[in-house]
Length: 159
Image 1 (spheres, rainbow, N blue to C red):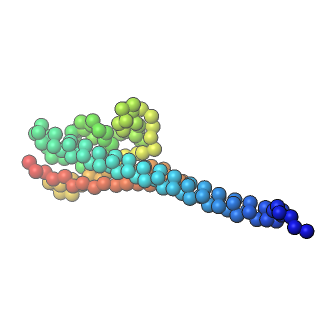
Image 2 (cartoon, one colour):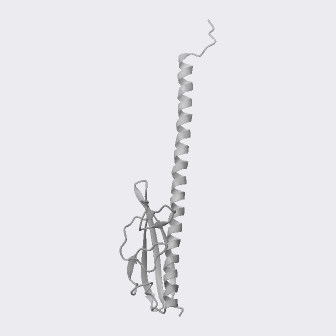
Image 3 (cartoon, rainbow, N blue to C red):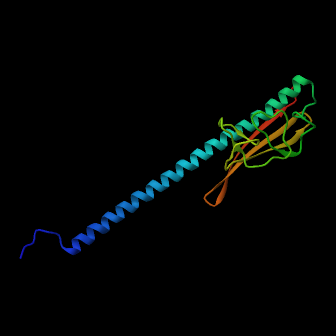
């Protein structure tokens, strides 16, 4: 007796193969989305670390124009501490509320806006009387752990 249709066993086997293919596809899509999110956060954190270093360099340059002593960075001598900065800082911020916030204009600040996942600290270390080591650390939570990007800059007393 010849039946032109599928048997129950053939149908179950084809459904099993199809479910494996769909599961593998969703696993690849999930992995790619997680990778894209990690890359996006790493890119933002790198920009925030670079911004922090540039703000501190700007504070050093402003001190030079104002005739302030090297290492004051907009306030009293700053070597040997951990601080915060934002894009419009006129001096190092000794205490700040991490995490950073993102305001309506898209700027990262401590003043107003919605909380982000990023925290930034600036560590100032005196290497010598004419050199400061600036380390900017940006961290964020990622899949049950904490990821971190660091930038280091050496500022010199060139005046």
